[in-house]
Length: 333
Image 1: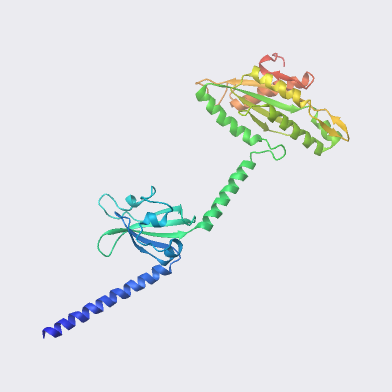
Image 2: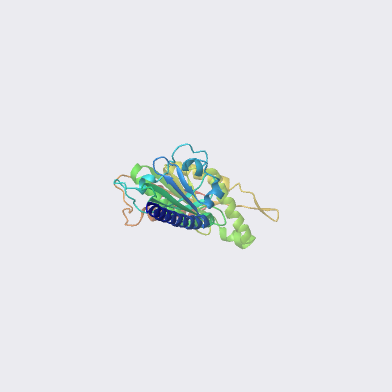
């Protein structure tokens, strides 16, 4: 009787063992068939408990290494970005799935990682990670971001002269004036207009006119400081913004620019084309009480543009090829 009972229990144990082995084989087959890394590691010791076939093909056989030694290049201590602490709460219970992206230091591939704490067969909680290769999508995303940044940059640059355009000017002034408000500095604004530019186009053609604009822009760029900014805001109109520069110092700089523009060697059929520009200069002194509007109720940028334009108009009326300061204009001008 005793032998029959023992045989019965042994048969049940064998059946249960076979059933568990079958379940394990099924789960292992599924995990090893996935086109993704699946691994399980101990929370405390970082010991690797399981790595599927995908992982072993990419990172090799674990050979007793800890997860950070196995998955990362030259890593001999837990990773600084390890998120084990996020997977269990203060009571030691799972917090759910933590999803993040990472470029692996061994394969150099990008992965979307889904990490969570799961209860292992021995009752302890372990780290389960499923990492899917998203390299192609990531590279496509990075390419789109680069293209977007390049397009944004090009949208602020004049395609002919390669200096900043009108849109960039207003964006720059908004940021610059906000900076001045907190630092009580000064700024000069110079409007530049090419003298008799229509004659250049009419007599020598638009391609020669384009060449003249490029040469003038290059000449201005070569004379202004690294902190200064040049913008093309219209056909033959430019604006120079000079931070931390009052109108007298701006006038001295503009005079150098004006003289150098007169030295531009632009030729047409072996005949020199004489170029010159007129300039209108104004400046702005900020105070801590300044806001975005001046005494006329319009923006400071528009106010400075209006003042510089008046000075420029005076330079044109008085014979061109000269610079005028707004502060020195007579009431009638």
